[in-house]
Image (cartoon, rainbow, N blue to C red; front, side, top):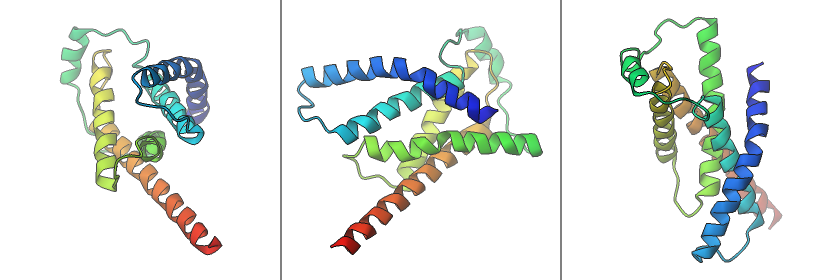
Length: 176
């Protein structure tokens, strides 16, 4: 059920992502920061924008009514689950899975930077903290477990990316 809802959020994000990505490309070309059209890179960048919008939709940031009073009230409810039952474990796994694509997409989209597991983990951690922080303005509860699982999901995605890159390199060596 959660996975189907996630796919619906992903599909709903496509029109907005297309508009945002088209605007970003136009700005990039107007500023002469981009002259070549690299189809593969553009596909990854577009998927990255779709993914970010879907995450913001799934977490309730898009469409949320922001209220400072809710934020102040939410400060007292920041928590860390120590009791792990079947439902909590399932939600932790879903949080982790939700951020795996981020760990794959980051090094593909920002390819001019040398990435490693620590940098990707920190970026996933910071993105997750930003989401949890913004959710507090909507009266939502903020949990440290979510931040950690999201960051570990990002790291897992980076490891998957690294393995796929290594397999591709070995294939190229074998073909030579």
